Amino acid sequence: MSRRLSSLRTAALLCAGAFGVHQLRYLGAFGGEAEQALHDSGHDYLLGVEPLIGLAMAFLVGHLLWRLLFARRGREPFSRAQAGVSFAGALVLVFTVQELSEGWVAAGHAPGLGGVFGAGGWLALPLSVVAAGLLVLFIRAEDAAADTDVVGVRLGLPPAAARPAALAAPDSAAPSTRRLPRHLAGRGPPAVLSH
Image (cartoon, rainbow, N blue to C red; front, side, top):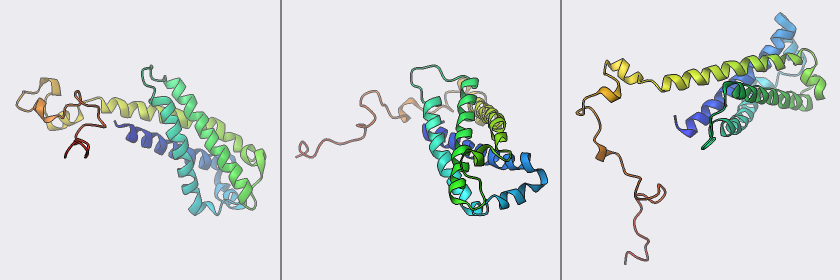
């Protein structure tokens, strides 16, 4: 998987986790009254704005988290526990910033830490841990699936190593990157030297 796709995947998962933590916090604290509690605490404006705020924030945190967890050149990858703790911390951070922002701009929403952890807001802590565990499991499962020869299985072909040479791409088809650094490959001579 490319670096860009891995980063986007992590950010998208973080968005889903942050939205889930926020919504489940109200459901856990207020049960069937959650929708009314959201309305009473000034969350009406979030119908259009919440997804955009959450998306932007989660992309920023997700990108940073991906850089810290999965772009560690020359080092061992993080363990599941380290990734889980990082995701849980990121989800708590996103939830806290979101609730503090709502306290500043939404009428009826409690300001400060009372708005973050009061009225069942403390539920965001265990919900973040559970959501982080699910995110780590999803990433590990997706990585494991990406390591298998899914196309070969679907087509009924043997694994790539056992395929006849006639089905394999010729070595000359792949561009060589050994001679020139990537940023110089395919570049002509400077204009000064071409005259």
